[in-house]
Amino acid sequence: MSRKVKLIIIFFLLLDISYITLKGLNLSFLNLPNIKGLLYDKSSYNSSIFNGIEPPPFEYGKKLENHFIEDIYSNAINVSENNKCFKLIRIVQSKNTDNINIDSFINFVELQNDISNRDILYVYIISSNESNKITENLKYLQNKYNIAICQVSTNFLKKVYNISNFRCEYNMLLDNNNNIRLNDFGLDNELIREIVQYEFSKGLLREN
Amino acid sequence: MIIFKKKHCYQFIVILVFMSNFTSCSNEDDELLHYNIVTYVQKVMIDENYYFNDEALNRPYIIKISPASGEMIIADRGNRCLYVFSKQDTFTFINKIGRPGQGPGEFLSIGSMDVDNQGDIYVLDNNNMRLTIFSKDGKYLHSFRVGSTSTSTSIFVTSNQNILINSPKNGYYITIYNKFGEKLKVIGNVSHYFEDKYNRHNERYAEGFPLKIDDKYYIFFKHMPYSKIYDKDGNLISENSLLNVLGINSKTEYIPKNGKIKFSPYIPVFFDNADFYNENIYLITRPYRSKITNNFRCPIFVLSKELKIQKEIELPLNENDRILKSTGLILYFEIINNEESVLLPMHDASKILIYSVK
Image 1 (cartoon, rainbow over the protein chains, first blue to last red):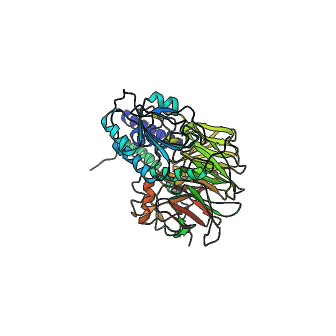
Image 2: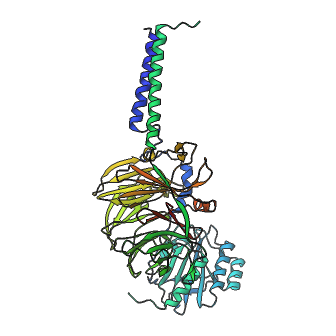
Image 3: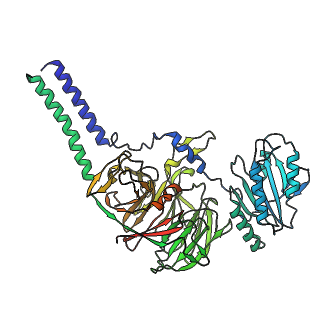
């Protein structure tokens, strides 16, 4: 047998052995998911990153103490002491606190209209790391819609509301005694309205 | 004229031997596909115009039949509550459990539900990140926080009322709680995260459906035909590709036609749920459009505890049901009447389908 033929035979034998080995290990021909190395296309999974849900910072019924904020006229909104009504607070994050996402604000106004018969203090809080600049636009919006607009730092949010780096709007409902009745991210108006009405009907919570 | 020399004969023999391996291999694969395929018939059990208690279904998500009473419990994501119906053929409304909110017994987003053998109901609330337990008559018992969840977190309640939660966001394939919220055990470390620009982990590949069968813990992954089995102490017993078991892989589609299996280019197989009934494991795939028949397909694979395929249940879907595919939600199902029928909630269509052999 010539050398050339021997080489061909060895070549095919090696191919044969490698094929049988791979088949035995169930690897190459089945696209077996490799859990450890995870050979999945990273880009195809990026959309799922945002499926994560932020936990609500407070338990239902927890009392929020010493809760002081100021509106854009520097009027103190002493939420903790205002025991006459429920308080509905929406917090949004913005790059510039001197401006406002009008869609988000109008959405909050719509919510106010939906539950107009209720005695509720509406507070719209804009949070940013940058210095605050009060604009005529904000003053106009506060006067027109009777919604207290506040500007706070992200540190304030972390300290008082225990939230940071959130993407959706954060909604909070406090009752007369400043007990948390609702606190969560990205709730739609219909759901908030339904919950507000039901929480009104519950009356006072029992003290723990 | 071609003259065959001795060396040509050697080459020819080697090529023959080599090719024979491939031929025998393909025959072997065909044999794997010989299992019973039962095509069910679809009927609408509750449609979107069915009113009860002055309300109607609004995105029904999960159905469970209570082993204790036989009553049907429907988790409704739109109305954020549970509806209980009687077990008779004409399903009659009995009770409503829960309502929207964050207080005791209230829900913001129902993620998963199961019923134990005493009839107590366990509901995972994704937004509130807690598990709420109701008695069989709908009375609120208690709730506890379960850590981070995702929209597709699945739970399974064992025969001794322990709760298995698929919890990759907390770093484990399965976290086990007892009925009172005490964390008993964690099983399977989830590692190798993807991270995005916000340094947030993407553990979606570890999402799956936990089961406890005998003394073993199973996890069936959602995004790949793959499973892991752990012993009662949480030690890994085996990792199993279901590609061979189900006779499918990511490049081929299996479809019964004239008693034969045909292959065609295919989309990846995702599983929408797994459950354990009558000593068998039921795996349902995400509905997809067949490239051969152009119809929507939604097969349920029935496996033994040893992960051997027993049969396949073919659930025909209408064109109008295509919206199921776009929901991105887990497709829950319930086996009733001793495997003869399958209940399927149509999330976006607000109706309940029942599939049976005839």
